[in-house]
Amino acid sequence: MPGKDWLPAAVRAVAIDRKLKSGEALFRFGDKTTGFCEVIAGRVRMCRVDRSGREVILFVAGPGETIAEASLFSTVYHCDAIASTDVLVRIYPKQALLAAFEKDRKAAQAFAATLARQVMNLRTRIEQRNIRSARERVRHYLGLNADAGGRSVSLPGTLKDLAAELGLTHEALYRTLAALERSGEIKRSKGKIALLRRRKI
Image (tube, rainbow, N blue to C red; front, top):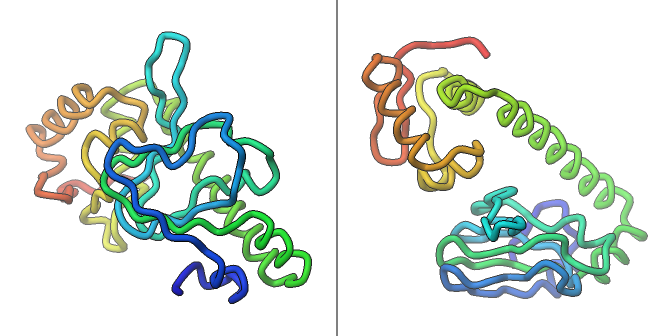
């Protein structure tokens, strides 16, 4: 059973695969925690509902990414996890993981490193959200996510997913991308944005 490389074989052996249809919940706020999850196929959004009933997206996970790591140290989930597409998710049971971490120092260190990377990614997202101009926020994202040559950005999901990650309405993102394309900064194609002018971030 394939999984994250650092996971002990005993944990991979008891993992549970679960298929979800688009719109189906993997778990809801307040549900009892069972373990953390790896997205094998599709996309899952972590979200909360604010007082006005609006869904606030915290993170969108794609293939190879994990979610709900903090659930290992909590009795209940603190947000919803909803399938944005049809998905396959692998659930690693909480008790098996905690027992493995007590026995396997390298696995525990690798898990800590995973959490550290997530903290760095979260700080980057906070930095992006603090940029008031939609155009500059999009430019910041494109600069950070460009390929090694700085020439293009591959979009892991839909433009709606990107808008949610950037904290923009999808209408504002579409307008911003159209303006950048008209100005000759980018060129859009399916699943990719070519950068025609290199910018330093």
